[in-house]
Length: 321
Image (cartoon, rainbow, N blue to C red; front, side, top):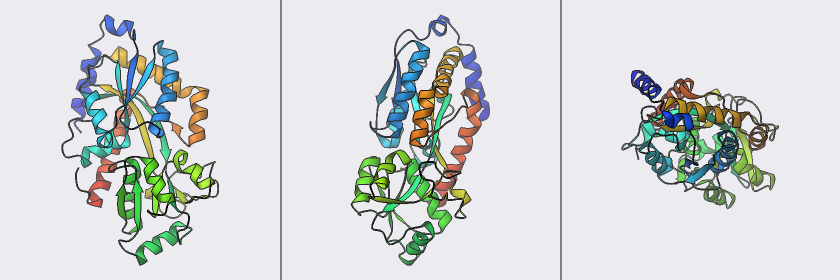
């Protein structure tokens, strides 16, 4: 990533502070979520948008534009007018992994966009079909080694966090698993519950109810420490796999060239939203931690994530989409 290019974009935006920025916003803002309604990205964005609206004095409207593992909506926003009225919900997949995974990606996360604010990070739970013959990660690894190539894992789509965390696990554990991608978390979980797929990494808010109902069993979490909602579930680090400590993240970004004063107002509204009791209570309930980095200070974080997941993709030998 050419840091000089990124800095140049920020310097250019500093020069663009017309009256438009001073009166911003004077109409509703569209926040594009490049995934289908109903998932964690949708529910998280909606509550943050409602709180941002209070600070901005204008509605922040969620626009779900699913497709291409998040690339469709993200590409559309990259081409949008850089006036602050169109934002994108960026994720680990769209703003990091896709740089390596997508061969015809038409945008660069840090040259076609300006980061406004990170939103939150969520760990995954490693879950298994309730009737599976293993009840712990060591037992599962032993089973996978005894049945090479026969074990399957589902995900919410190629290149999504739930896919790449499983690819990382394959490398760390030294096992083989067959990937079964779905168009979203819900159908993947349905097939897990029916016993058509063996294991999956997914968010606590998605799998929690099924675990409580006895339809799935949870073997571990990728969180840095045990989750309050699952105190008896060990972390991957506790099991000797420190490289499996990973959390999926989200962000608010706008097209490059958006005036700095506009970015500042959006960042202030996002910061206030993430600091609110309502958002923090909701995030705690779904196992998400607010991330308070904003604007240019998020660039090193995103650059590091691009490298990390690029390395995972290369080691896994994943074919570019």
